Image 1 (cartoon, rainbow, N blue to C red):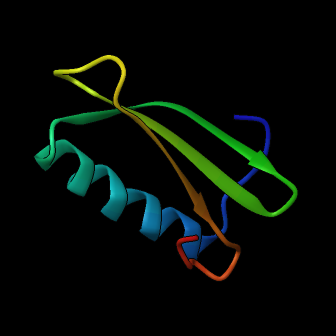
Image 2 (image 1 turned 180 degrees about the horizontal axis):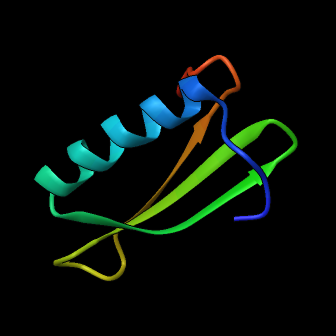
Length: 62
């Protein structure tokens, strides 16, 4: 990851990681573009099932 997280983004990331683990998804890439954090996750059971989450600087999820 090339940028830094603010506290709200870090809290949302931790919550998202716990939720994804329960759904059998793993995070395979994190990166920032500007102030936005992008989290890429894929299913542990199906390689074609992928999700991208965008976390705003305010901690919101798009």
